[in-house]
Amino acid sequence: CPSMSFVIGALVLAVGIYAEIERQKYKTLESAFLAPAIILILLGIVMFLVSFVGVLASLRDNLCLLQAFMYILGICLLIELTGGVVALIFRNQTIKFLNDNIRRGIENYYDDLDFKNIMDSVQKQFKCCGGEDYRDWSQNVYHSCAAPGPLACGVPYTCCIRNKTDIINTMCGYKTIDQERLSVQHVIYVRGCTNAVLIWFLDNYTIMAGVLLGILLPQFLGVLLSLLYITRVEDIIMEHKLTESFFGEVRHRAAPESSGAGCCMCYPG
Image 1 (tube, one colour):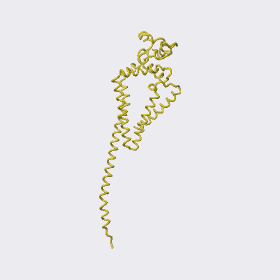
Image 2 (spheres, helix red, strand yellow):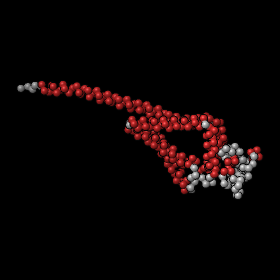
Image 3 (cartoon, rainbow, N blue to C red):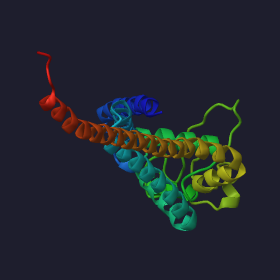
Image 4 (cartoon, helix red, strand yellow):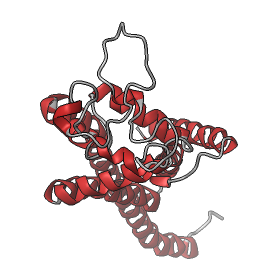
């Protein structure tokens, strides 16, 4: 288990580093929260280090390293569970946090290629526009109603309602931001992507439960197996100490008898 996680962590770290190098070539870094490469690098480092400790501990049967691996894995699992519970309890604050970060990303939509690709994909797949709603696009200097260009007061074409067979019209969202929802709902998606994604999660709760189980169950099993392995190693150490103590006592008792017999030994004349 640790060796597999070690390999996966190394691969994730390598992909993250490669993506970050490529992204830096185009100077697209605007927000670490919205940078997939940064997330991959951090995730890869954590997986790599934790798995490395686990592999080394299992190879050496080192009790301290085994305990460190178990505690680190347990802490990671506890943080994930706590984060999920806190996000559910403070869901309004969580949604606001997501919307604020999406607005910050929208401000740099044309400069941050990572965010642009993610946002375009989400808007097309979930049939939504912006974070809270389509008016979030007014945060972008090109889509603001005060902007001088042709994109002013409009939304990207990925917000537009169209059939798969339709030819893409990049100006389909022209002059929609300053309109009421009812007047543009047949032209663009008016609901925000945050709510659209949350509704999809609720509608597909079985899939999400399976994904969460696939993430959390291996970690729980890792903690449990580490605990059992530590218990086994402690038992072996204790048996070894008892064996050494027993044989040491036997040798200690046998030593005086041997020395006495040697002194009184008679050789034939």
